[in-house]
Image (cartoon, rainbow, N blue to C red; front, top):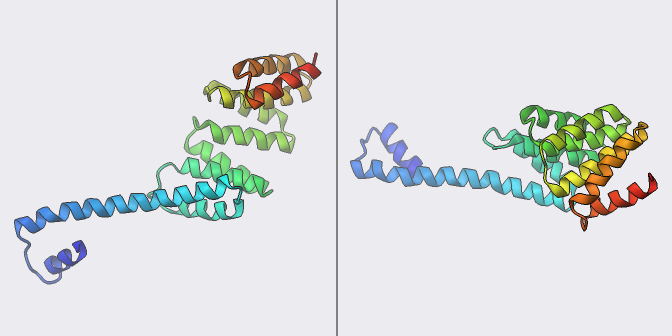
Length: 193
């Protein structure tokens, strides 16, 4: 309807009446809302694929989101894309997308946390430790913090810093005593006594 009105005005040379101009605003708003909802629909579909561990499909959906210049928050899509690629064993692509997410938004701790996991798996202890420590500086919340501290403790212990590992595990086990990472931390701590 709006395109027709604009065509009559600019192609046909017919001047719109004041009421016609006023009626264009709701149509323009409806179009804008529709475009936003379309972008969000893609995001939710990508999230659904991701959460159901359909990583190949998630990669496709997340790439579509990243190709859309109007998509808000590309660092989130990059983080999820990096994790999906990590789960698919595409370590170089995972690293590239996670690093790009951190470049976009350095305070987006999930991207940095996933980079720490990737670096740990690659055997880059120093880089993994640095990423985990930076995540802790951002206060990710008790559940995430317990996992970060557990993973940090693994890296500290494997690099010979058993005392540092014990400190991290003690703090992690106290954060959410009933949480899975707190329980794992408490069990791991027993092996370091």
